[in-house]
Length: 359
Image 1 (tube, rainbow, N blue to C red):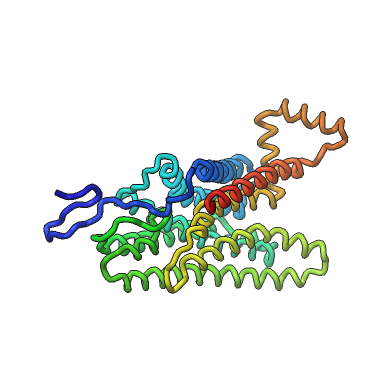
Image 2: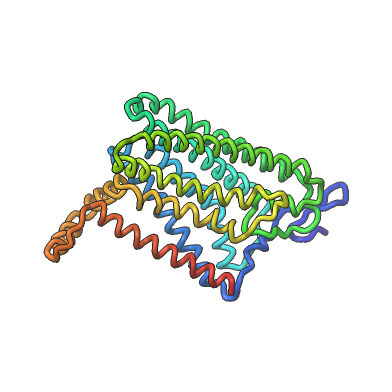
């Protein structure tokens, strides 16, 4: 009789029907870690969901750069949601089991959305190059057809790569242990678990991931080299400062995202660091929404406008009281103050979770 999690095949071998996520083992008690994960995920959902609603609701943000930013928020929410809810549920219930089909779905959507984000960041770099280096031709070079094509290509590349990775990985034989030494179903820990030859699968991962990362990084580097050359040609120091500040949010997102990818996946030993995995899957989606909100005056202004429309009486009373105290700030500064408080709270929660995890 077959054991739970296994099914006996006609060849008297066993195939796995479920996996156990050992990476979810943590300190005792796990309540502080669970609360931190839930807080970060809720901030991620609120930040990225709010960004999408804000961009769709404000006509001033219906331009290519915010079109890309809206999809970046959707992608961040997508690959975070592929991992974080299961992780939180396992911490809360102690049930670390994930079905074979659930593992396949998690792997597909995580790899797909993460690859789409690579392509999106490259498309956003191209958009920044067009805006900074050819501002007079920006409306003609970034037409609706152009950025729709870039967006469609990003999703096609992302989920085509995810299909290849998922099919290639799950075709391997998992007739031994079903314990995954990770937080979620990802390619490297599944390859380490397989009992069949994984040499060809590792080559597929290395070359496809290597191509995606190197090609998109090349597009980003070339775009920013041209942007830097164009900015240096400006005579006004104030103009150069403003030009650099418009690229700062995107450069921050690129540095954190690609730095973590290279650290995690492009190691010859395929040894994935769990802390880096948590940062990559849970924290980066939260930080992206906060980074683009805090450093973008148009987003902050649109946020305050939306808030004024939802509760005009409350905000007008608070504005009058602030004015009476001589502290009536501009709208972008008021929105920035609120967002900065959220960022401080989120980073404090992250540090607390890291402390409890290492107890």
